[in-house]
Image (cartoon, rainbow, N blue to C red):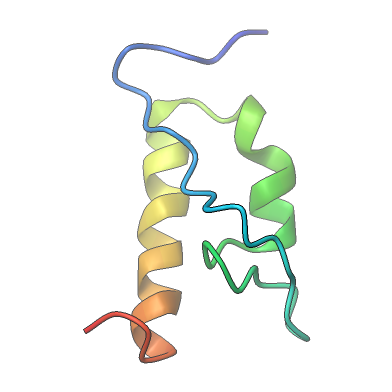
Length: 64
């Protein structure tokens, strides 16, 4: 099933693919399960994952 549409966001991956002790990528702040599910998510699901990653980045103090 191809879930790519014109309004689907691109992957937030920045090629720093290292998981911390909580299984969160230190590059994009997605969880391991979110990374694994990315290709099967629809546009709304991808936007939600990006929102969650931004919340994690802010909580870590990496984004002001």
